[in-house]
Image (cartoon, rainbow, N blue to C red; front, side):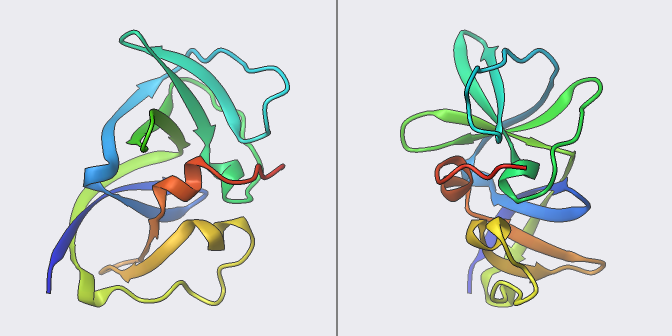
Length: 145
């Protein structure tokens, strides 16, 4: 039995988690450069200490409609094999440590693009946390809202 630490965040009222080892940093940012002709889930580009980061709207990747963000957006910067990419989320949560033995399969009620991005579900005291596959969220076919 081993434990895994997850950085949690909310998107469209649902709690998600990414393994802490995949998260580079979490920050609020407000100035994105639009990318003409980009897929609908691309929120734009921004400069993070000299590194150009693509911001992907996780809401859209999960099949939810895009929302107009006012003020700084919350970004979860994830490390992929080749680069760092930002996932735009609604709210940042806490870091939780969970036993891998309590992981449950992806719920049957989860459908659409979200089903392809989730690896497991973890029942917490007051809600369900869905473990997000960072690589799948970053790559893959564009979902259009």
